[in-house]
Image (cartoon, rainbow, N blue to C red):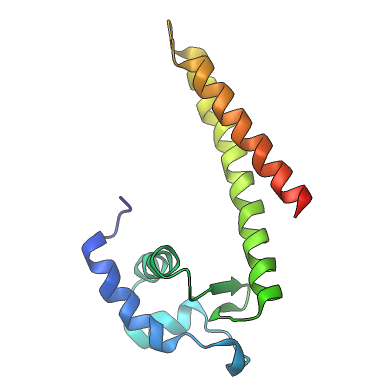
Length: 134
């Protein structure tokens, strides 16, 4: 469960939803604007954004360097989703190579190590294949 008092996340999300523009508004809202308008802190805004994305995927909340907005443009949503997948793959790969694999090698008599290694490497391979074919 993420930090940030999870029971409060729906309330934080409710405070930012009316402030997030749609694609038809042709603008983005920044984290700083959301913080100023709501009085929420940075991590509360991030938790609210995560809550919205996790619980309301039917309302695509996309982001860019310019900020956040809802979109109904299929190409824009796909481009954003692909970028998120690519970023997630990088995080997973770095986590595996930098922490998980060394840990698996260091644990003595680790019966599950080879299984975890095989499954994690397969996940990385499959996600990489997904990115190259879509």
